[in-house]
Image (cartoon, rainbow, N blue to C red):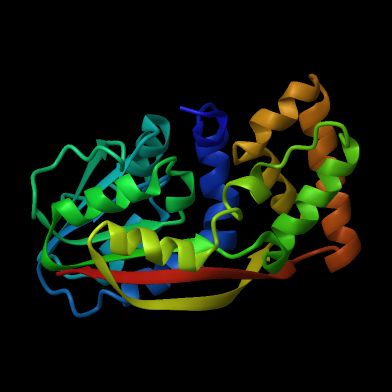
Length: 269
């Protein structure tokens, strides 16, 4: 597992506390709404993380729908399970590129902001197709380029200025580095899917203050792993620099920035 895929230590709790409501919840609600017609059946969630989308699915879908929520990182799943005790959800550690499930088991596969972390996307897409029943749906979201996601862009620039020789570029490289929907569509088709829609969704990202934004990105993502290579004081310095930059652009008190993602829906034959 590469460092961009490592979510451990205090990262899961900070990720959920700060980034969950700030950037993930608006898209989780949208994802769940897209399945409003599902009255019964099985949903598989890959790269479930701390369960932001899982919680939205449980709230929106009827009891006839059960959910298997998986992630590569057991610490993320442990945190997610602690937030959502539900007999409708099974939590299971799994690699989306090697799913431990039989063919045609699920009616829907969903993945909110996890595809960017798959080293072999074609293999992960083929696995999603394999475990879906004929006519099943695969819904996933990816972040648009970082310039369209204002808080992340400001944070990366502020922290990069501290370490110009070795800037922490996790956010630009991974979460915001896989927004080429034409490439994703080609991989989906190669995996056996028919792409039915690709939709760009712009939403508002809100936080109680600039420090919450800085903590979320600098301390609640694998960007932290890169920052900490610069020394014992680096994490505090990077967080302070990011908070200062957010305040300079958006002011003190509650802050709002633009976020944009691509939501893809595909179906099996």
